[in-house]
Image (cartoon, rainbow, N blue to C red; front, side, top):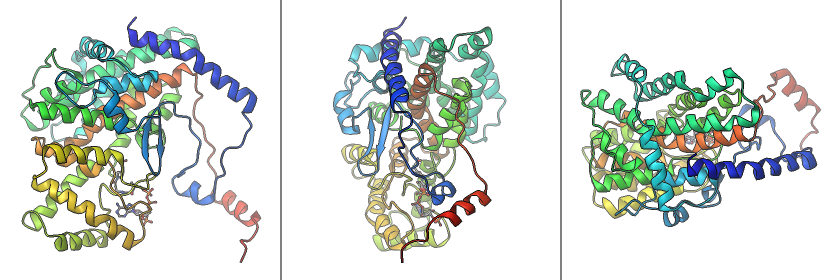
Length: 439
Ligand code: AMX
Protein backbone atom coordinates (compact mmCIF):
# COMPACT_ATOMS: atom_id res chain seq x y z
CA UNK A 1 0.00 0.00 0.00
CA UNK A 2 1.32 3.47 -0.84
CA UNK A 3 2.27 5.86 1.95
CA UNK A 4 -0.47 8.28 0.93
CA UNK A 5 -3.12 5.58 1.08
CA UNK A 6 -1.96 4.43 4.51
CA UNK A 7 -1.85 7.98 5.76
CA UNK A 8 -5.37 8.61 4.47
CA UNK A 9 -6.67 5.39 6.00
CA UNK A 10 -5.33 6.45 9.37
CA UNK A 11 -7.50 9.60 9.20
CA UNK A 12 -10.78 7.84 8.47
CA UNK A 13 -11.54 6.40 11.92
CA UNK A 14 -11.14 9.64 13.91
CA UNK A 15 -13.23 11.57 11.41
CA UNK A 16 -15.99 8.93 11.41
CA UNK A 17 -16.08 9.12 15.23
CA UNK A 18 -16.24 12.91 15.16
CA UNK A 19 -19.14 12.94 12.70
CA UNK A 20 -21.08 10.21 14.49
CA UNK A 21 -20.77 12.04 17.81
CA UNK A 22 -21.90 15.33 16.27
CA UNK A 23 -24.93 13.81 14.55
CA UNK A 24 -25.89 11.69 17.58
CA UNK A 25 -25.58 14.43 20.17
CA UNK A 26 -26.37 17.60 18.22
CA UNK A 27 -28.01 16.47 15.01
CA UNK A 28 -31.17 18.53 15.62
CA UNK A 29 -29.42 21.87 16.11
CA UNK A 30 -30.72 24.41 13.55
CA UNK A 31 -27.90 26.13 11.65
CA UNK A 32 -29.57 28.21 8.95
CA UNK A 33 -32.75 29.93 7.80
CA UNK A 34 -33.84 29.93 4.17
CA UNK A 35 -35.68 32.71 2.35
CA UNK A 36 -37.88 32.55 -0.72
CA UNK A 37 -35.28 34.64 -2.60
CA UNK A 38 -32.65 32.03 -1.85
CA UNK A 39 -34.82 29.19 -3.10
CA UNK A 40 -35.53 31.03 -6.35
CA UNK A 41 -32.06 32.60 -6.58
CA UNK A 42 -29.81 29.59 -7.02
CA UNK A 43 -29.84 28.47 -3.34
CA UNK A 44 -27.23 31.14 -2.71
CA UNK A 45 -25.45 30.92 0.66
CA UNK A 46 -27.72 28.23 2.14
CA UNK A 47 -25.50 26.19 4.44
CA UNK A 48 -26.49 22.69 3.47
CA UNK A 49 -23.42 20.75 2.44
CA UNK A 50 -20.45 19.44 4.36
CA UNK A 51 -17.06 19.86 2.69
CA UNK A 52 -14.00 18.39 4.36
CA UNK A 53 -11.15 20.05 2.53
CA UNK A 54 -11.63 23.78 1.97
CA UNK A 55 -13.72 26.77 3.00
CA UNK A 56 -14.43 30.03 1.20
CA UNK A 57 -14.67 33.27 3.14
CA UNK A 58 -16.36 36.14 1.24
CA UNK A 59 -13.76 38.65 2.41
CA UNK A 60 -10.51 36.75 2.51
CA UNK A 61 -11.06 34.06 -0.11
CA UNK A 62 -10.24 30.39 -0.12
CA UNK A 63 -8.58 28.53 2.73
CA UNK A 64 -7.42 25.02 2.00
CA UNK A 65 -7.75 23.19 5.31
CA UNK A 66 -7.18 26.48 7.08
CA UNK A 67 -4.27 27.68 4.95
CA UNK A 68 -4.38 30.62 2.53
CA UNK A 69 -2.72 30.53 -0.88
CA UNK A 70 0.34 32.54 0.34
CA UNK A 71 0.62 30.14 3.31
CA UNK A 72 0.71 27.19 0.95
CA UNK A 73 3.12 28.90 -1.43
CA UNK A 74 5.46 29.10 1.55
CA UNK A 75 4.79 25.68 3.08
CA UNK A 76 4.24 23.17 0.25
CA UNK A 77 7.34 21.49 -1.24
CA UNK A 78 8.83 22.88 -4.45
CA UNK A 79 10.24 20.98 -7.42
CA UNK A 80 14.04 21.08 -7.73
CA UNK A 81 15.00 24.54 -8.93
CA UNK A 82 11.42 25.85 -8.65
CA UNK A 83 9.76 28.30 -6.29
CA UNK A 84 6.06 27.49 -6.80
CA UNK A 85 4.32 24.71 -4.82
CA UNK A 86 3.88 21.27 -6.40
CA UNK A 87 0.31 20.09 -7.17
CA UNK A 88 1.26 16.68 -5.76
CA UNK A 89 1.63 18.49 -2.43
CA UNK A 90 -1.78 20.15 -2.52
CA UNK A 91 -3.42 16.81 -3.31
CA UNK A 92 -1.64 15.14 -0.39
CA UNK A 93 -2.59 18.03 1.86
CA UNK A 94 -6.23 18.20 0.78
CA UNK A 95 -6.66 14.47 1.21
CA UNK A 96 -4.88 14.01 4.54
CA UNK A 97 -4.78 17.44 6.19
CA UNK A 98 -1.03 16.99 6.82
CA UNK A 99 1.67 18.99 5.09
CA UNK A 100 3.76 16.70 2.88
CA UNK A 101 7.53 16.53 2.60
CA UNK A 102 9.30 16.70 -0.74
CA UNK A 103 9.67 12.90 -0.62
CA UNK A 104 5.91 12.51 -0.13
CA UNK A 105 5.40 14.59 -3.27
CA UNK A 106 8.02 12.66 -5.20
CA UNK A 107 6.28 9.40 -4.25
CA UNK A 108 3.01 10.73 -5.70
CA UNK A 109 4.77 11.88 -8.87
CA UNK A 110 6.10 8.36 -9.23
CA UNK A 111 2.77 6.70 -8.44
CA UNK A 112 0.92 8.87 -10.96
CA UNK A 113 3.62 8.12 -13.53
CA UNK A 114 3.06 4.38 -13.00
CA UNK A 115 -0.69 4.73 -13.43
CA UNK A 116 -0.58 7.16 -16.35
CA UNK A 117 -0.86 4.88 -19.43
CA UNK A 118 -4.01 5.62 -21.43
CA UNK A 119 -5.98 2.51 -22.44
CA UNK A 120 -6.60 1.78 -26.11
CA UNK A 121 -10.36 2.29 -25.83
CA UNK A 122 -9.84 5.83 -24.52
CA UNK A 123 -7.56 6.63 -27.46
CA UNK A 124 -10.12 5.17 -29.87
CA UNK A 125 -12.87 7.27 -28.26
CA UNK A 126 -10.79 10.43 -28.56
CA UNK A 127 -9.85 9.70 -32.16
CA UNK A 128 -13.54 9.33 -33.06
CA UNK A 129 -14.36 12.87 -31.89
CA UNK A 130 -14.13 15.61 -34.55
CA UNK A 131 -11.12 17.79 -33.70
CA UNK A 132 -13.19 20.97 -33.82
CA UNK A 133 -15.37 19.69 -30.95
CA UNK A 134 -14.96 21.94 -27.92
CA UNK A 135 -12.02 20.73 -25.78
CA UNK A 136 -14.28 20.48 -22.71
CA UNK A 137 -16.61 18.09 -24.55
CA UNK A 138 -13.58 16.00 -25.48
CA UNK A 139 -12.42 16.03 -21.87
CA UNK A 140 -15.77 14.93 -20.52
CA UNK A 141 -16.06 12.11 -23.06
CA UNK A 142 -12.48 10.94 -22.47
CA UNK A 143 -13.03 10.76 -18.71
CA UNK A 144 -16.32 8.95 -19.17
CA UNK A 145 -14.70 6.36 -21.42
CA UNK A 146 -12.41 5.39 -18.51
CA UNK A 147 -15.50 4.32 -16.56
CA UNK A 148 -15.23 0.92 -18.23
CA UNK A 149 -12.27 0.14 -15.95
CA UNK A 150 -13.66 1.57 -12.71
CA UNK A 151 -12.48 -0.51 -9.76
CA UNK A 152 -15.24 0.94 -7.61
CA UNK A 153 -17.94 -0.10 -10.09
CA UNK A 154 -16.50 -3.60 -10.42
CA UNK A 155 -16.12 -4.12 -6.68
CA UNK A 156 -19.61 -2.74 -6.01
CA UNK A 157 -21.09 -5.13 -8.54
CA UNK A 158 -19.23 -8.02 -6.93
CA UNK A 159 -20.59 -7.00 -3.53
CA UNK A 160 -18.57 -4.85 -1.17
CA UNK A 161 -19.29 -3.69 2.40
CA UNK A 162 -19.93 0.04 2.83
CA UNK A 163 -16.89 0.41 5.05
CA UNK A 164 -14.67 -0.51 2.09
CA UNK A 165 -16.08 1.98 -0.43
CA UNK A 166 -13.25 4.42 0.04
CA UNK A 167 -10.60 1.91 -1.07
CA UNK A 168 -11.56 1.34 -4.73
CA UNK A 169 -12.65 5.00 -4.88
CA UNK A 170 -9.10 5.96 -3.89
CA UNK A 171 -7.73 3.64 -6.59
CA UNK A 172 -10.00 5.12 -9.28
CA UNK A 173 -9.11 8.67 -8.24
CA UNK A 174 -5.38 7.97 -8.39
CA UNK A 175 -5.80 6.34 -11.82
CA UNK A 176 -7.77 9.30 -13.10
CA UNK A 177 -5.46 12.00 -11.73
CA UNK A 178 -2.50 10.13 -13.21
CA UNK A 179 -4.07 10.12 -16.66
CA UNK A 180 -5.51 13.66 -16.79
CA UNK A 181 -2.36 15.53 -17.92
CA UNK A 182 -1.92 13.29 -20.95
CA UNK A 183 -5.65 13.37 -21.72
CA UNK A 184 -5.53 17.18 -21.61
CA UNK A 185 -2.37 17.36 -23.71
CA UNK A 186 -3.80 14.96 -26.29
CA UNK A 187 -6.93 17.05 -26.61
CA UNK A 188 -4.75 20.13 -27.14
CA UNK A 189 -2.38 18.52 -29.65
CA UNK A 190 -5.15 16.86 -31.70
CA UNK A 191 -7.25 20.04 -31.74
CA UNK A 192 -4.51 22.54 -32.53
CA UNK A 193 -1.23 20.80 -33.42
CA UNK A 194 -2.27 18.31 -36.09
CA UNK A 195 -2.27 15.32 -33.75
CA UNK A 196 1.50 15.43 -33.19
CA UNK A 197 1.68 14.07 -29.67
CA UNK A 198 4.58 14.43 -27.26
CA UNK A 199 5.42 11.53 -24.95
CA UNK A 200 5.62 12.12 -21.20
CA UNK A 201 9.06 12.67 -19.71
CA UNK A 202 9.47 10.33 -16.71
CA UNK A 203 11.93 12.76 -15.09
CA UNK A 204 9.38 15.55 -14.75
CA UNK A 205 6.84 16.22 -12.02
CA UNK A 206 3.09 16.17 -12.76
CA UNK A 207 2.76 19.88 -13.62
CA UNK A 208 5.99 20.13 -15.61
CA UNK A 209 4.96 17.03 -17.54
CA UNK A 210 1.64 18.65 -18.36
CA UNK A 211 3.56 21.63 -19.81
CA UNK A 212 5.96 19.32 -21.64
CA UNK A 213 3.19 17.25 -23.27
CA UNK A 214 1.41 20.43 -24.33
CA UNK A 215 4.64 21.33 -26.14
CA UNK A 216 5.88 24.23 -24.00
CA UNK A 217 9.22 23.26 -22.47
CA UNK A 218 10.19 26.41 -20.60
CA UNK A 219 11.08 26.31 -16.93
CA UNK A 220 9.01 29.46 -16.30
CA UNK A 221 5.98 27.77 -17.85
CA UNK A 222 6.60 24.71 -15.66
CA UNK A 223 6.43 27.09 -12.72
CA UNK A 224 3.23 28.65 -14.00
CA UNK A 225 1.67 25.20 -14.40
CA UNK A 226 2.58 24.33 -10.79
CA UNK A 227 1.00 27.51 -9.49
CA UNK A 228 -2.01 27.25 -11.80
CA UNK A 229 -2.73 23.62 -10.94
CA UNK A 230 -2.48 24.33 -7.21
CA UNK A 231 -4.68 27.43 -7.04
CA UNK A 232 -7.55 26.08 -9.16
CA UNK A 233 -7.77 22.81 -7.22
CA UNK A 234 -10.64 23.54 -4.85
CA UNK A 235 -13.07 26.33 -3.89
CA UNK A 236 -15.26 24.70 -1.23
CA UNK A 237 -18.25 22.54 -2.16
CA UNK A 238 -21.05 24.74 -3.46
CA UNK A 239 -19.62 25.81 -6.82
CA UNK A 240 -21.11 24.07 -9.85
CA UNK A 241 -18.26 21.65 -10.63
CA UNK A 242 -17.62 20.64 -7.02
CA UNK A 243 -21.28 20.28 -6.19
CA UNK A 244 -21.93 18.27 -9.36
CA UNK A 245 -19.17 15.81 -8.53
CA UNK A 246 -20.49 15.53 -4.98
CA UNK A 247 -24.11 15.05 -6.08
CA UNK A 248 -23.41 12.46 -8.77
CA UNK A 249 -21.02 10.61 -6.47
CA UNK A 250 -23.68 10.50 -3.76
CA UNK A 251 -25.63 8.02 -5.90
CA UNK A 252 -22.50 5.82 -5.63
CA UNK A 253 -21.62 6.65 -9.21
CA UNK A 254 -17.87 6.12 -9.51
CA UNK A 255 -15.14 8.75 -9.92
CA UNK A 256 -15.32 8.72 -13.72
CA UNK A 257 -19.07 9.35 -13.90
CA UNK A 258 -18.80 12.01 -11.19
CA UNK A 259 -15.82 13.80 -12.67
CA UNK A 260 -17.16 13.75 -16.22
CA UNK A 261 -20.41 15.32 -14.98
CA UNK A 262 -18.45 17.93 -13.03
CA UNK A 263 -16.59 18.90 -16.19
CA UNK A 264 -19.89 19.52 -17.98
CA UNK A 265 -20.68 22.08 -15.28
CA UNK A 266 -17.21 23.61 -15.38
CA UNK A 267 -17.78 24.14 -19.12
CA UNK A 268 -20.47 26.77 -18.45
CA UNK A 269 -19.54 30.43 -19.21
CA UNK A 270 -20.63 31.59 -15.75
CA UNK A 271 -18.24 29.05 -14.19
CA UNK A 272 -14.94 27.68 -15.58
CA UNK A 273 -15.44 28.70 -19.19
CA UNK A 274 -15.09 32.31 -18.02
CA UNK A 275 -11.29 31.99 -18.42
CA UNK A 276 -11.73 31.44 -22.17
CA UNK A 277 -14.33 34.21 -22.33
CA UNK A 278 -11.94 36.67 -20.66
CA UNK A 279 -9.23 36.05 -23.23
CA UNK A 280 -11.70 36.22 -26.12
CA UNK A 281 -13.02 39.52 -24.78
CA UNK A 282 -9.50 40.97 -24.33
CA UNK A 283 -8.56 39.94 -27.86
CA UNK A 284 -11.69 41.70 -29.13
CA UNK A 285 -10.78 44.83 -27.15
CA UNK A 286 -7.26 44.90 -28.61
CA UNK A 287 -8.49 44.13 -32.14
CA UNK A 288 -11.30 46.69 -32.09
CA UNK A 289 -9.14 49.41 -30.52
CA UNK A 290 -5.90 48.68 -32.41
CA UNK A 291 -3.65 47.43 -29.57
CA UNK A 292 -3.38 48.48 -25.94
CA UNK A 293 -6.32 50.87 -25.44
CA UNK A 294 -6.19 54.10 -23.47
CA UNK A 295 -8.04 54.06 -20.15
CA UNK A 296 -10.77 56.27 -21.67
CA UNK A 297 -11.25 53.80 -24.53
CA UNK A 298 -11.35 50.90 -22.09
CA UNK A 299 -13.86 52.69 -19.92
CA UNK A 300 -16.20 53.11 -22.89
CA UNK A 301 -15.61 49.51 -24.06
CA UNK A 302 -16.53 48.13 -20.65
CA UNK A 303 -19.72 50.17 -20.58
CA UNK A 304 -20.56 49.09 -24.14
CA UNK A 305 -20.13 45.45 -23.05
CA UNK A 306 -22.55 45.94 -20.17
CA UNK A 307 -25.02 47.91 -22.28
CA UNK A 308 -25.10 45.13 -24.88
CA UNK A 309 -26.43 42.85 -22.12
CA UNK A 310 -23.22 40.86 -21.62
CA UNK A 311 -21.35 40.28 -18.40
CA UNK A 312 -17.78 41.44 -17.86
CA UNK A 313 -16.11 38.04 -17.85
CA UNK A 314 -13.79 37.32 -14.93
CA UNK A 315 -15.53 39.80 -12.64
CA UNK A 316 -18.05 39.07 -9.91
CA UNK A 317 -18.54 36.01 -7.75
CA UNK A 318 -21.34 34.16 -6.04
CA UNK A 319 -19.52 34.15 -2.67
CA UNK A 320 -16.43 36.39 -2.80
CA UNK A 321 -16.78 40.09 -2.01
CA UNK A 322 -13.12 41.09 -2.49
CA UNK A 323 -10.46 40.53 -5.13
CA UNK A 324 -9.92 36.78 -5.42
CA UNK A 325 -6.58 35.78 -3.83
CA UNK A 326 -6.14 33.43 -6.81
CA UNK A 327 -6.18 36.56 -8.99
CA UNK A 328 -3.58 38.18 -6.74
CA UNK A 329 -1.31 35.12 -6.88
CA UNK A 330 -1.41 35.20 -10.67
CA UNK A 331 -0.89 38.96 -10.77
CA UNK A 332 2.21 38.55 -8.64
CA UNK A 333 3.47 35.89 -11.02
CA UNK A 334 2.91 38.30 -13.93
CA UNK A 335 4.63 41.19 -12.14
CA UNK A 336 7.62 38.92 -11.59
CA UNK A 337 7.85 37.28 -15.01
CA UNK A 338 6.07 39.45 -17.61
CA UNK A 339 5.68 42.97 -16.19
CA UNK A 340 5.97 44.70 -19.56
CA UNK A 341 3.72 42.44 -21.60
CA UNK A 342 1.06 44.44 -23.49
CA UNK A 343 -1.81 42.11 -22.65
CA UNK A 344 -0.87 42.15 -18.96
CA UNK A 345 -1.09 45.94 -19.13
CA UNK A 346 -4.64 45.62 -20.49
CA UNK A 347 -5.53 43.14 -17.71
CA UNK A 348 -4.11 45.56 -15.13
CA UNK A 349 -6.00 48.51 -16.60
CA UNK A 350 -9.23 46.51 -16.52
CA UNK A 351 -8.53 45.78 -12.84
CA UNK A 352 -8.30 49.52 -12.25
CA UNK A 353 -11.42 50.46 -14.21
CA UNK A 354 -13.94 47.57 -14.22
CA UNK A 355 -14.72 47.52 -10.47
CA UNK A 356 -15.62 51.23 -10.53
CA UNK A 357 -17.94 50.67 -13.49
CA UNK A 358 -19.61 47.63 -11.92
CA UNK A 359 -20.13 49.62 -8.71
CA UNK A 360 -21.60 52.50 -10.73
CA UNK A 361 -23.90 50.10 -12.59
CA UNK A 362 -25.01 48.80 -9.22
CA UNK A 363 -26.02 45.25 -10.12
CA UNK A 364 -23.13 42.91 -9.37
CA UNK A 365 -22.77 42.18 -5.65
CA UNK A 366 -19.05 41.73 -6.13
CA UNK A 367 -17.31 44.14 -8.54
CA UNK A 368 -13.87 42.55 -8.08
CA UNK A 369 -11.98 40.11 -10.32
CA UNK A 370 -12.07 36.34 -9.84
CA UNK A 371 -9.49 33.71 -10.77
CA UNK A 372 -10.52 33.65 -14.43
CA UNK A 373 -9.75 37.34 -15.02
CA UNK A 374 -6.04 36.60 -14.92
CA UNK A 375 -5.24 33.05 -15.94
CA UNK A 376 -5.58 33.48 -19.71
CA UNK A 377 -3.00 36.23 -20.14
CA UNK A 378 -0.34 34.07 -18.44
CA UNK A 379 -1.06 31.05 -20.62
CA UNK A 380 -1.15 33.23 -23.74
CA UNK A 381 2.21 34.81 -22.95
CA UNK A 382 3.95 31.43 -22.92
CA UNK A 383 2.44 30.39 -26.25
CA UNK A 384 -0.76 28.64 -25.21
CA UNK A 385 -2.85 30.94 -27.39
CA UNK A 386 -5.81 28.65 -28.20
CA UNK A 387 -8.08 29.94 -25.47
CA UNK A 388 -10.91 27.47 -26.07
CA UNK A 389 -8.57 25.00 -24.38
CA UNK A 390 -8.09 26.94 -21.14
CA UNK A 391 -10.95 25.39 -19.19
CA UNK A 392 -9.42 21.93 -19.68
CA UNK A 393 -6.44 23.01 -17.55
CA UNK A 394 -8.86 24.37 -14.95
CA UNK A 395 -10.53 20.93 -14.98
CA UNK A 396 -7.25 19.04 -14.56
CA UNK A 397 -6.58 21.10 -11.46
CA UNK A 398 -10.14 21.08 -10.08
CA UNK A 399 -10.03 17.26 -10.24
CA UNK A 400 -7.61 17.19 -7.29
CA UNK A 401 -10.00 18.95 -4.93
CA UNK A 402 -13.30 17.42 -5.91
CA UNK A 403 -11.87 13.91 -6.15
CA UNK A 404 -10.13 14.19 -2.76
CA UNK A 405 -13.55 15.13 -1.37
CA UNK A 406 -15.15 12.22 -3.23
CA UNK A 407 -12.82 9.76 -1.48
CA UNK A 408 -13.73 11.36 1.84
CA UNK A 409 -17.44 11.20 1.02
CA UNK A 410 -17.23 7.45 0.47
CA UNK A 411 -14.99 6.96 3.52
CA UNK A 412 -17.62 8.71 5.65
CA UNK A 413 -20.54 6.91 4.05
CA UNK A 414 -22.28 10.17 3.16
CA UNK A 415 -25.90 9.76 2.08
CA UNK A 416 -27.40 10.16 -1.35
CA UNK A 417 -28.29 13.85 -1.81
CA UNK A 418 -31.99 14.60 -1.93
CA UNK A 419 -32.99 18.16 -1.02
CA UNK A 420 -36.71 18.97 -1.08
CA UNK A 421 -38.00 20.97 -4.02
CA UNK A 422 -41.20 23.00 -3.69
CA UNK A 423 -43.97 24.36 -5.91
CA UNK A 424 -44.69 28.05 -6.47
CA UNK A 425 -48.08 27.52 -4.75
CA UNK A 426 -46.28 26.35 -1.58
CA UNK A 427 -43.95 29.36 -1.67
CA UNK A 428 -46.95 31.69 -2.09
CA UNK A 429 -48.67 30.01 0.85
CA UNK A 430 -45.60 30.58 3.04
CA UNK A 431 -45.46 34.21 1.87
CA UNK A 432 -49.14 34.72 2.78
CA UNK A 433 -48.58 33.27 6.28
CA UNK A 434 -45.58 35.49 7.00
CA UNK A 435 -46.20 38.61 9.13
CA UNK A 436 -46.26 41.89 7.16
CA UNK A 437 -42.91 43.74 7.33
CA UNK A 438 -42.76 46.63 9.84
CA UNK A 439 -43.38 50.02 8.16
N1 AMX B 1 -20.73 41.72 -15.33
C1 AMX B 1 -22.00 42.19 -15.48
N2 AMX B 1 -23.01 41.90 -14.67
C2 AMX B 1 -22.72 41.12 -13.61
C3 AMX B 1 -21.45 40.62 -13.37
C4 AMX B 1 -20.43 40.92 -14.29
N3 AMX B 1 -19.20 40.45 -14.18
N4 AMX B 1 -21.50 39.85 -12.25
C5 AMX B 1 -22.77 39.89 -11.80
N5 AMX B 1 -23.52 40.64 -12.64
C6 AMX B 1 -24.95 40.85 -12.58
C7 AMX B 1 -25.66 39.52 -12.68
O1 AMX B 1 -25.75 39.08 -14.04
C8 AMX B 1 -27.00 39.82 -12.05
O2 AMX B 1 -27.76 40.51 -13.01
P1 AMX B 1 -29.36 40.27 -13.14
O3 AMX B 1 -29.90 40.73 -11.82
O4 AMX B 1 -29.74 41.08 -14.30
O5 AMX B 1 -29.54 38.79 -13.34
C9 AMX B 1 -26.61 40.81 -10.95
O6 AMX B 1 -25.33 41.36 -11.32
C10 AMX B 1 -26.49 40.17 -9.59
O7 AMX B 1 -25.60 39.06 -9.67
P2 AMX B 1 -24.71 38.62 -8.42
O8 AMX B 1 -25.64 38.22 -7.33
O9 AMX B 1 -23.69 39.65 -8.12
O10 AMX B 1 -23.91 37.36 -9.01
P3 AMX B 1 -24.35 35.84 -9.03
O11 AMX B 1 -24.00 35.24 -7.72
O12 AMX B 1 -25.73 35.67 -9.52
O13 AMX B 1 -23.39 35.27 -10.17
C11 AMX B 1 -21.32 35.11 -11.33
C12 AMX B 1 -22.01 35.15 -9.96
C13 AMX B 1 -19.87 34.73 -11.16
C14 AMX B 1 -22.01 34.06 -12.20
C15 AMX B 1 -21.44 36.53 -11.97
O14 AMX B 1 -20.73 37.46 -11.19
C16 AMX B 1 -20.94 36.57 -13.39
O15 AMX B 1 -21.72 36.28 -14.32
N6 AMX B 1 -19.63 36.93 -13.63
C17 AMX B 1 -19.03 36.88 -14.94
C18 AMX B 1 -18.68 35.45 -15.33
C19 AMX B 1 -17.51 34.94 -14.52
O16 AMX B 1 -16.50 35.58 -14.36
N7 AMX B 1 -17.65 33.69 -14.04
C20 AMX B 1 -16.54 33.01 -13.32
C21 AMX B 1 -16.79 32.90 -11.82
C22 AMX B 1 -15.66 32.14 -11.14
C23 AMX B 1 -15.70 30.70 -11.52
O17 AMX B 1 -16.64 29.98 -11.22
N8 AMX B 1 -14.73 30.21 -12.23
